[in-house]
Length: 464
Image 1 (cartoon, rainbow, N blue to C red):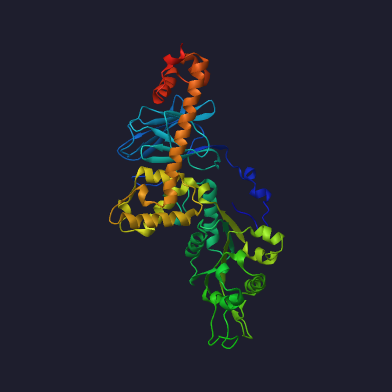
Image 2 (image 1 turned 90 degrees about the vertical axis):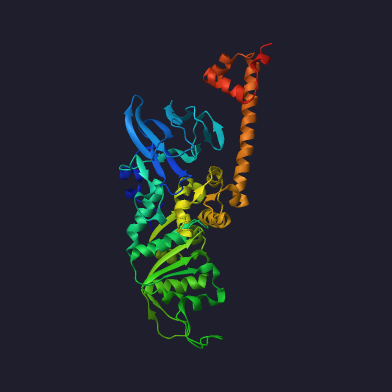
């Protein structure tokens, strides 16, 4: 989400004033585990009455009019899908997933379901393909009903999320200007990746110079940044140009700018204002041509309020602000991010790599506290462990990620126990009358019979 220099939204920034479309449900095809490089897809469900899923000879996603309104037909070359696998229907203002008698079944949040009312953020597993359901998202006027993540923009800035896609589009527009950019977000969310992409799109002839402000020795910050003349201090045996001058005609990336000491903040502000650097021990400044991108995981606005970060420096850095959400908040993008990482790590064999469905399940359900950086390290180690092979199995993933599968198993057991207890209570209440139980829970009699079979419950025992 973007803000102006002082964080204030103007009337022109109000979504209502820009003619934002209505809010509605969306379905994201996040990952085909056996074909992890197939482009993820976003499907807008506003105006749609039904989505049908099944196996086809090739991927084909189309819409057509039907008796229930617009229908989306999703065909995938997934050998684990049945020809008629499942349908998603809009009933009584709720989206309900129904298994169509498939061989391998449907899973919602890691639990096998024949029918399930979906809630926001649910992860659906149909065959070896994974989806995420979102109940309430803005669909801007002009947003397509069917959108493939790879169809536009840099792969480094690819996303299925409409709001983040708009932020990335604005960043691309800003890239060729000299406007400073402040990138905010948790550690590991990809701030340096965005900064490098902006530099590549800027067409500036100089280098991209990255500085971790938190890693600079406090007593040598200014010498490292601005350079020094020989003899300026003990140990200064030769002239050094400094990191800022190394970025002349290029891009200066100030990572973790919130960690910059107060004394150095004043010196950096002077450089940005005057566009010149005075090395330590020098009497004359040296002009520099810099494009500045800063990043932080700290709340800079709050630091300005409490006086730990200079307001004037903040104003200089925050020409345009963008916040990168944590990976747990953009689970829809795990497929496109994983594909980009795998291509970068193993370009020569990327086309052969596939994920075992259980491995993909772990990736989708894990919390990723280390964000994109943790996902990158996870896949890097997996590629090492599979050696010359091409299939990533759960055992190739870090133990913390594998734990997500164990957690799902525990959740399934709790869910099954709860469902069984509820059935037993209702059977006792209605003296084994299946029709009465079905009427109470609002389900078909056949569905109750399926539950009884699943939990090995004999209704005759309640009719005495």
